[in-house]
Image (cartoon, rainbow, N blue to C red):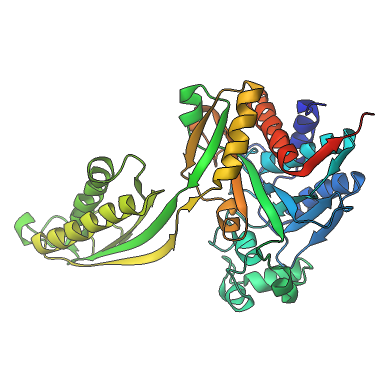
Length: 416
């Protein structure tokens, strides 16, 4: 049997109804009313397939199919939370493709050597507390209860309290941590969130590596004064200095690093932020990513040197602080090989690709073999209302997921 794109499309439209901002993208934060509605809808479908369902202390949903086998599970899934005014495919399509995979296995009466576990990770986007992949970090032992108590949302309520108020048993998170050997492999289907696959006219991206990243906060301080009465040669203007440094970041990423390196300044603050006042202080944030640590290092080294030069030239005080980092992750070569073989047999046009965005799968790579399937995002759009993936690409991606799961878990099929 083949997967049914009609069932996936129907489930997609039903879930996206649970949305805080209808008409302005999709907003469904973890632990919200809309999240509860989406969870209830999907868990009802899981129950209908005879799956056993467990929800852990931070809201990760783990539903198992094929309970007759006690061997390590094949884990498939993604997340259902969104950014504010985001798209309807990010994360959700991976969950619904996993659900459809299990439907087909049930219809085929597949006999499993390994059970299939559908996982829905909580708080992947970081929309509540500013920490991405919170659910998978807790699941893999990278966040403790004390750390959850220190993470606060915009209302000053901790992640610990939010989970308790969502009727989750957050005190029990330690017993839910996955250990090596418990999961045979983890496979996540996701939209690319970029334009590479569309540009290359490929329906499938087989992910080789997930980028590592470093985030820096840069502060430049000068002398605030009147914009009209202060001669240019007597100024210590941190905004002018910041402009020089920011302009050099693009140069470093394009010309001094690696072809896989990206560097972005997307957040900037100015004090006192008045049109007729030379600023006193400027802060901006640099996001540097690469699958190779060397690419990040080259940008950091150049920017650090450039910041010192500009500070001296413009009589500014400056500092650069590392405020966040994650390591790049190479995905499982054995799972990649299975995917390549399945894609070649299906005739779907595919290519190997790296992920410039972080995903829950990156956290899982510490405890099991991980594979990722990308499908195209039209126009490279994501995290916005215009996010869109074609049904034919969704079907191709789900078919590859099904074929890969069968290769890993199915001993034989019984004719109906």
